[in-house]
Length: 514
Image (cartoon, rainbow, N blue to C red; front, side):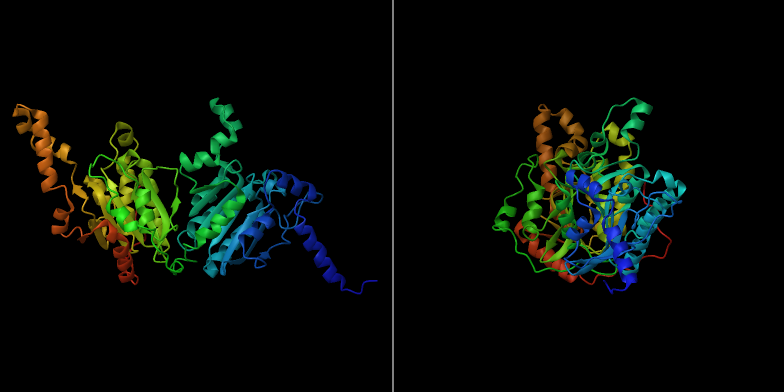
């Protein structure tokens, strides 16, 4: 006969009921889909045996006879990731399909509050059918409270969302408000209005994957920042992302052991820009040759591919990279690229991540469609983001920097701390051919050979204006450097600016273009 305290036995029974989640059958169905349970996912996310659950025994306020479960469909708590404190919540799809009710939402809000009070990152593992219909406005209120915290805590602690299943209806606003969103191919999807409603209202035939799958959001909508093949890869990616980020806005990103440069980087950089300004080259390769080897982690890599943003390290220090890709649209900036750059610049500025901008753009993409859809408004966002950013800002003009695009891409005029240019840089209002056609139109028209005259005047314009030395003479470029020197120059500048401090003007807040 057991002499153990019955109160302790009662506690163990309640804990066992909570750990059983929705029951063995539902757990088996979750596994059959290739998906883990909430606690299995958290065990992979955190360092072994460090996760401490909070609210395990919280239960929905149900009428007598109604189905209810300990934990109410979400596991919340904190633990260590690479030795750093991190808070997290994981929705349990084995209980009401992970749908959110009043107590479920309250648990998430409480863990968000604890994360901010502790100054620690927050990771949400999302797998939910949306608001719990039977709880009516209480479920909707729970989501509203989460959205409010996503917004209020933005820029205070890093918020990362791992979308490991469905996220439909208004629930989609929460991951959209977080800093980084990771989706899983063939497993994650999110949309405001489902396929059935769209079919009934518009007659359009579409399935969940086509409407809001991972590929849609990583390449078309731009909502997802990363896509992984499995949920295990998504969890590993979240752990890696944290190595680039501080725990909160008052700290600097963690330093790691300095990494070396890629073998033969200097010689490759000196030869990478073609002599023909119309010939493309890979800016991705430039970045990889400058930053610590294997440290570049591109963000939104399949969206607006004419722009590049991502996290990397220079001599062990985390940096944010912004660039244009000459191999896509010649690096011209369009609406999507403008939005992509703007949000990333503000993200880096919020979390004390220095910005390094590689510039090679012929300007903003021309076209009626771009003008009608607000390229001016969207381009103005880049101006706003760089002008208000207070982290160290370094820029390197590798080739083309024409017109307004030169100005908006972290120019000295918008507050860049140090600006470099390669000898291949072309900094001017426009390219040689366009400038010659305007400046010498009469001479060209009167020439017996207009094509030859246009080419001659274009060459004269390039020789006189289309080089980095005119900008350097005016103080807008701090130094013209060999490409091979880029890495060492950037490392030295980051070291000099490590204690940069800017006192912002007193105001409530600015009004960024929408």
